Each structure stands twice: as C-alpha cells, then as structure tokens.
Amino acid sequence: MKNEKLIHALGNCINYCNYCADACLDEENVKEMVSCIRLDRVCAEVCSTLNQLLAVNFQNVNDLVEYCATICEACADECSQHEAQHCQDCADACRKCASECRAFLA
Image (spheres, one colour):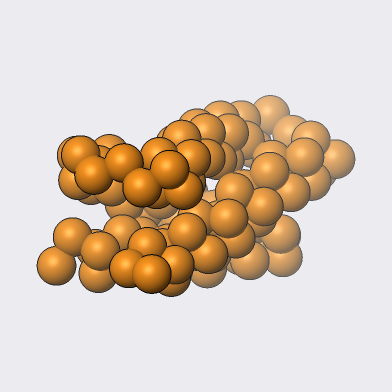
C-alpha cells in the first residue's frame, strides 16, 4: 500500500502533538508555551484530516500533503525551541511526518 508509511507517520505525529499540547499545559511557564500548544493542535488536526483522506484512498491530496509537510515543519521548529522532553519528542515526530509527506510527493 503506497500510503502505509505516510499513514503511520501521520498517526504517530497526531499522538505526539496531542500529548505535547496537553503536557505543555502543565508547564510552569505555560504562557510561553502558547505558540507550541496552538501549533500542536493545528498540526494534529491537519494530520488527522490527511490521514482520513488517505484511509479512504482519496486521490486528490497533493495540496493537503504539501500543507501538512509545511505545518509539521513549523510545529517541529516551535517544539524544538523548548527543553521539555515532550516537545523534543514531538519535534522529532513532526520532522519524520514532514519527511514522509515529501517522500509521498516525490
């Protein structure tokens, strides 16, 4: 299945983004985490939408895949600025997802 690696990466990214957003709410400096939380939520939503479309084998997804890669990269950039392990793990999952999006488009 052509979409299998991307679907797996999307699911992983969704999980890490949701976990990171929730964990950020427990950080002492939660006001400094607002951009991280927001990007986590947006990234999880975009990945979820793409995941659903790929699961039904919808063909016209390239623009959404491109946007998903862009959002994942933005989320990775934001999360990587924070020391918390959940942010670092999320950044890694987002980078991997962006990479799978680019591979899908290649």
